[in-house]
Image 1 (cartoon, rainbow, N blue to C red):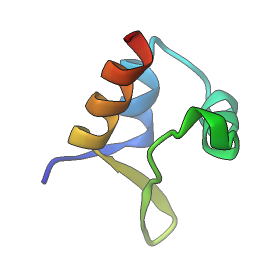
Image 2 (cartoon, rainbow, N blue to C red; image 1 turned 90 degrees about the vertical axis):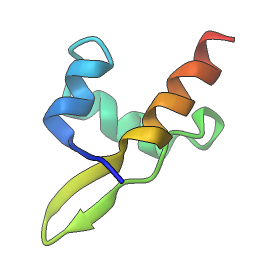
Image 3 (tube, rainbow, N blue to C red; image 1 turned 60 degrees about the vertical axis):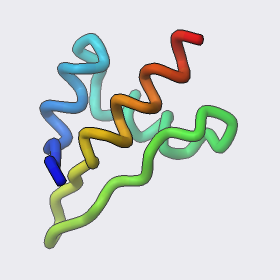
Length: 58
């Protein structure tokens, strides 16, 4: 399982801001992957993010 930190997720989504990530997480209709928390840091499973991106294109 490959985990991506928030900074990497922001880059993969085209350079979005932390606020945009927060908005994605709060919008239930977007079905954005839930992060894993390690202490206070957020990480996403790479496979979950890739699947979400693929579904957004279709």
